[in-house]
Amino acid sequence: MYFKMPVGEALVYALLGYAVVFFGICLLMAVVMIMGKIFIAKDKKAAAAKAAAAPAPAAAPAEAPKPTAPGSAGELKLHDVEPKTAAMIMAIVADKMGKPLNELRFISIKEVK
Amino acid sequence: MNIGEILLGLWNKSGFAQIITGFVSSNGWQNLVMLVVACVLLYLAIVKKFEPLLLLGIAFGCLLSNLPGAGLYNQQLWDAYVQGVPYVNAAGEVVEHITFTTIIHDGGLLDIFYIGVKSSLYPCLIFMGVGAMTDFGPLLSNPKSLLLGAAAQLGVFVAFFGAVLLGFTGKEAASIGIIGGADGPTAIFLTSRLAPHLLGAIAVAAYSYMALIPLIQPPIMNLMTTPEQRKIKMVQTRQVSKTEKIIFPIVVTLFVAMLLPDTAPLIGCLMLGNLFKECGVTDRLSDTVQNALMNIVTILLSTAVGATMIGSRFLTVETLKIVLLGVIAFGISTAGGLLGGQVMCAMTRGKVNPLIGSAGVSAVPMAARVSNVQGQKANPSNFLLMHAMGPNVAGVIGSAIAAGFLLSVFG
Image 1 (cartoon, one colour):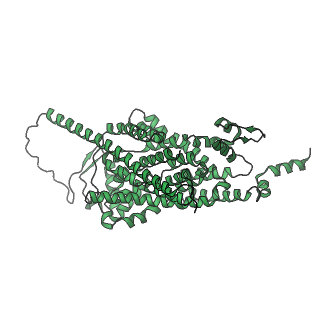
Image 2 (spheres, chains in turn purple, yellow; image 1 turned 90 degrees about the horizontal axis):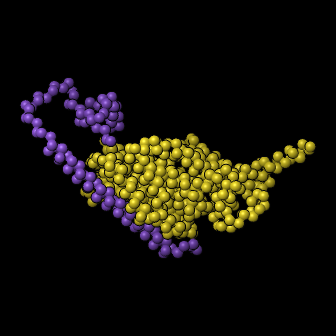
Image 3 (cartoon, chains in turn blue, brown; image 1 turned 90 degrees about the vertical axis):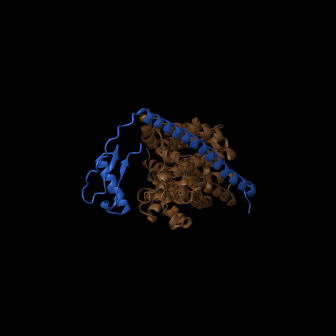
């Protein structure tokens, strides 16, 4: 059969191309990882500085847990989420998992920004 | 005034007469077949909803360019432009050097649309829209997922090699191989530069297979993973700060475009669109790029690409080979991503679900959704979508790098 391009040459190009894609992606991955490490360290530093700046709260007597309704799985913490949205999310999760809502326990719902 | 002569003149000018008189001699039968092909594609777009936003325009462009006598798209004009040979226009004048100005002057409406494809304007603007719609957060929170985007480019190079074995030239093989990247704009960008005569077939194959991802990928995923592996739940990744998201597009543009300058138009536009989205001070631009601009360019791009599907170019054995190689490219890219997923699963001692590897083909977000669905079939409480989005957007970068390599070698 007649080939318009030498097969050996095509094979080399194919292998080289795949290697170049990996090389480029690895380079990018290294940069992203370094970037991530810098930001994580910066965040930790900022959090530590914030914690040091805030005065230690006086030891308060431990609050008695609030009584919950029979069958309740406890309190749900909402962070930047409307109760209506949270109810909708819980209903969707229960529906997707095919389990009744009262068999699931939601601890907190937080909006990822 | 001779009414008979007027009617005869009207008849002779009509497309019906041109099809009948030139049925065999002027390939009129090919026009007819292409009109049927256009109707089939319209059916797939409207009834079966196969990538309708693009396929509808492609199908209608095909229908328009195959209307006998309408002169909306002139293949001879573009052949003369690409080959740099003289062209005889409708007035019988010989035009020595064809430029875009000549095309605007002598060409039809779809020729003018096609200038945007030939100059790479439309694929780049589409990439800008894709960038503005993409959240790179999952990739930034788990940078290792970039490797899966690279692994899933395997199909590009296997299909390239297969195309050479099937008798295509290097430039044609490179254009066919990029179908495996599962990225329409990249395929159009590369093909319009390397093998414009194959553009119609490659675009139709690429977009059709992208629409068929939910059918193509699951059997390969089931074959290459065990039920236990598919059940693996992945832990939540860290939250990415706004600053990281702003810096990322700038860093990617600098690194990737400096590594492979030929990728600069694609990567540059992708990252500019993303910067519009993330910087927080250009909401109006981000909104325009995501909606109005994206829609306008999609109309122009799809119609122009469809116009290249003229009978004499499309109804060939090469088109069948492209369709075959396209599905092989998609399948092998999926397998490559899954193989990468298996390696990561083994290296992390079962913390990575290998299903996210198949999302490394860049059809965003369809491939990630397929990973999520397959994961939930094995374990209904398994939510892989965000984990699969990392490899998915990495696939866009990976296919752009693959295109840049092929362009620098064969361009």
